Amino acid sequence: MDDILCESRTVNKTLAIINTSGLIYTYPGGREPSLVDVSLTIEKGDYVILTGPSGCGKTTLCRCLNGLIPHFYSGKLEGEIKVASLTVSEHSIYELAKHVGLVFQNPENQLFALSVEKDVAFGLENLGVPREDMRARVDWALQMTGIYDLRERAPHELSGGQQQRVAIACVLAMKPDIMVLDEPTSFLDPLGAQKIFEVIGDLNKKLGITVILVEHRLDLASKYANHVIVMDEGKVVLDGKPLDVFDSESARLIGVGIPKATRLYQALRQSGVYLNRVPVNSQEATLLLQEVLTRDRG
Amino acid sequence: MSVFEGFRFRRVLSPIHQLDPRVKFLYVCAVFGIAVMFNQLLPLILLFLIQLPFVLAAGVQKEWIRSMKGASFLALMIFLFNFLFTYFYREYPIFPPSSSLLEYSLAMTLRFIVLVESFSIFFLTTSPDRLGLALEQSHVPYEFCFAFTTAVRFVPVLAEEAQTIMDAQKARGLELERGNFIKRIRNYIPILIPLIVSAIRRSLELAEAMESRAWGATNKRTNLYVLKIERGDYILAVISVGMLILAVYIWLFMREQIPSLIPLITAQNV
Image 1 (cartoon, each protein chain N blue to C red):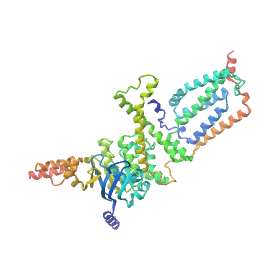
Image 2: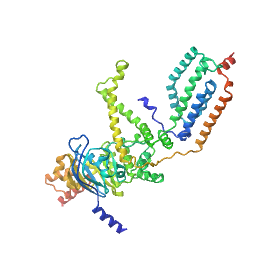
Image 3: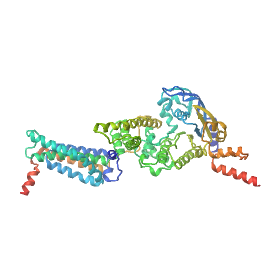
Image 4: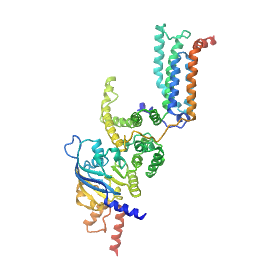
């Protein structure tokens, strides 16, 4: 057992699950490229947050990851992109769909069946999975996302948050290695968003699914992430650990929604109070402040 | 948006709802065939009454009465036209010699009502999901079945969107209920254009989502649900076929002996 674990760890380290180099893409009829020289490496099991101002090419990058670009959208794609050791331009979308699950922004437009479980089964039906298998995988996906009780309801009767969890279950049932979520919470209220983040965090932690989350609400999302990529005008401008990225000057200038705890840290630093670490959420900030306060008293 | 209310299928659990849509369709076809066979009042009244227990067993009386009300105007037109035309053209060949003009017109109207009745039972008790499944299992190409269920799924969504657009345009001063008939129709153009544009956008997003979930990966598509013919289905199938055989028998050998009703009633009253 230990051997297998060690082996998988070494494989993890050496094998990037997503690798792009010099990616340039122009939409059909577009004058300027939407992606400019994007080179990225994402490792297996990573939880990546992809952020940046609107129109910076985040969605375009997501579309590249599961082959919608170049197969569904024509246009000009240059450079190389490999996902789960498949070259995207050489494999069809349905082949890639077994490895990469894409969840879209608007939950309403990605659910098309008349009952939740039928919708979750849609991808498996397309792949021709036998029925007994399908039943088990649908139930499993429903349980993982906490919507097993809703399985017989019609999707359009559900709240936005529930719909988005259905959309995640739909993708999860196909057992992908990578899950790409394109602003999954932008139609949701804070509580619904919180739930979605918890579900995604679980998938990453318990199942080891590589997560790429496009998000503006970094306060809630950054708790789980171990890798942050910031894009601006089609380029990758920052790429690294959450703390380093959030604390950098350029992130603030681009207008990334830096977590409030990190901003507090920066404000304190300016007024001469140094915390031991950079916090990304309020719990961490509280602990660090307590440390500083007790130290000062002592 | 009361027009769309009728499309909203109400999920009810009743023995009729559980029946296989294919068998129910067989039943509808049998009723259709029988209704077209006879032009006398008595068999059509029987046919009308036979179906009432189905409505009650399914518990869809309210919806059923609403759909019958919707058909009443057409029924009235059919009655008037039949009455007037047969009055002027008495030599019309299928006119049964034994019955009166009034009875013939009534029978034609009832024939229409019986057809509406059986179709409304079918659609009120069959969920679009199961209907799509029945189509699929009857070897209709999957693309058509998918288009059908998706269309049904998006009716309430589009209705809601139409309402939003209407509110938005009204807030900008669009007056829908103004002017003569033609003007009123033209008033709806600022509603229709945004609705169509957003429907096209929506369909693009849908296509993206379908592609991302392995649409078209294999020709041997599997299905989460399977329709199975059960005991109730056999019973309904036997009833339908039995009714049809009986009707054909009567039509062949006893057609002339079917009494016309109006002379019967008036004779008793006198």
